[in-house]
Length: 334
Image (cartoon, rainbow, N blue to C red; front, side):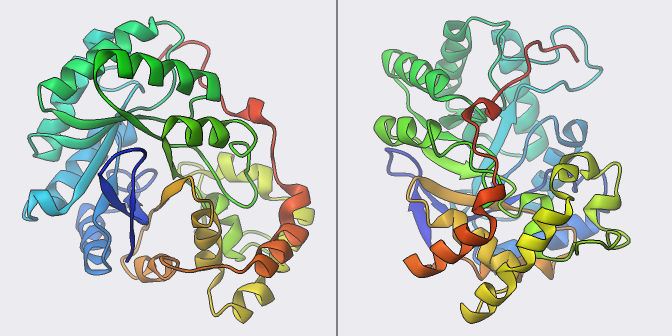
């Protein structure tokens, strides 16, 4: 495992982050989820990402139980605030001071820790003044409940304004968590240049495009039984945009590229996002502990320029690149 600095800070994270969205606390039994976390630790992963909204807080509880016997200083724990939790009442979501302050306390309790290393605004909240949100984050940092602050899926302009306010309030905004993969490149035109200017790193999710870049989905054939594309509760809607024969055929062209590079298809997908110098870490998940070792094989991989061009020739023309696809919900209705 290799490690990278997160933003303009002295804080290091593992190149591969273990995330428990869509699985732990809902689809995967808790004992298997714990085995996955143990496998991640054994593979050298030290960074773990969750959110209070995942499985309506249950994912945080699972992660807290799995990490409770670890030396706290040796792991980096990230969580997020924004989405609806609890009974989903009028103040049970968003980035108001009330919800942030109540949410951090709930997250710490479930994670069984006194602090999180990174606390992230899960989306931008158009219904709360940004000054209110950033002041609440500043107070949480001063209280020692979070060491650093990050965001997720913020536009370049939102990042600039958030960064400006964080400097005025005396804390660091060091990260953004966007979707990023060979097929989803919307951050490249605006978010990445702004982030490089501001000293903000990307912690990217879905580097395998919801599993499409694994190559297991074949053009003209039904999705494998038990895969994400067949699971209505596990992301079938999100993956649907890529379940087209032209995309699936193009992904098959990546197989010889991966083989020649000595990588599996998942490793090639994760290694590809890590070639972007603004990416500090790629988030991977698993529903089985044996899946972890494959993903970790992408750490430290250097893809030559010729390989990157071949990848671009194969799938680049089908990638989504519109910066307007970086967006948050217009309202925060539960």
